Length: 314
Image (cartoon, rainbow, N blue to C red; front, top):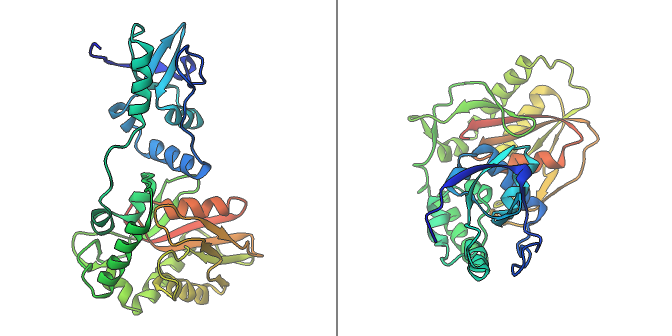
């Protein structure tokens, strides 16, 4: 096959593989709603990746049939994109070779090193990138080892913050979020910040100031909801921040309103009990990829929600 250059093709001319090409069965790949949402968010936040891994298409009359990238095509349409970078497979390519291209494009020959992922890669990033495992047992075992390492303080050399207030509004997803502190080159490690209970009041006081700057004065009908606990079910730093914030604002904090149906950081499943209040301050002590906030906000889509994140590591 000759070298194929990248072409920009209008989405109106690109169609999914529904078995319309003689000798080529329809696309054998499917995608679940939750993973489709992650794919859309991945493309929205990093569209340049589409130029690094173009759609593979085959000419058919005035249209182009997708051989590799049917799910990406669906996501691009959902996002309202107008065109797509494509590699056009020559029309004289034997259909047997086209079938091989389709299957090989969707094959994974390697395996994930679960130890490397657990210790050196961010859990939220793993979720956002849609990484799947045939079995999560090895990964979960490494997560338990990492938890013990954290408890011994061996992970205290990660991200840091000087805890100097730096309010910011960030456009992310539909609602966006407010942050109180930034990640800094020097300062306290995230581990050490969470180990000091006095910092719960520091986070709460700055969250109150943030709420006041929004001009919210009357908090009747408001409540506070925190991110679900996925690894450790006991009272944690975010709980303490929310309790302090609730006391300062005089509104209820509903602990564990959102819960995780599993302990899996790769494929989390959340559910919730809707509160009586119609307006919610959703709080988490740190944001990295925004995956947790994305899934929680999906549950609260019929409510007024203000997202407040403690440390912005996004």
